[in-house]
Image 1 (tube, helix red, strand yellow):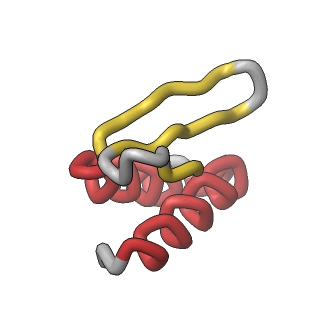
Image 2 (cartoon, helix red, strand yellow):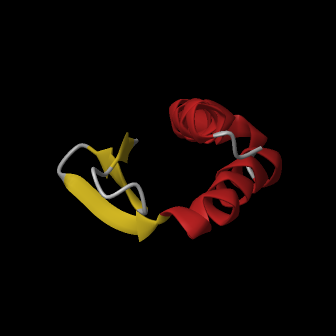
Length: 64
């Protein structure tokens, strides 16, 4: 996850895919990826990097 210079958005990137989101959507995406881990425990590891990166971004901006 990369916080954009404007401080109002962030970029999620995985492989060739990437998308920009408003910073206000950060809690929504963090909840989504955590829920995916709960719903699909056999694949929880696939979401671990995303959850960790979103957690770091949230911590860096003081949004928990």
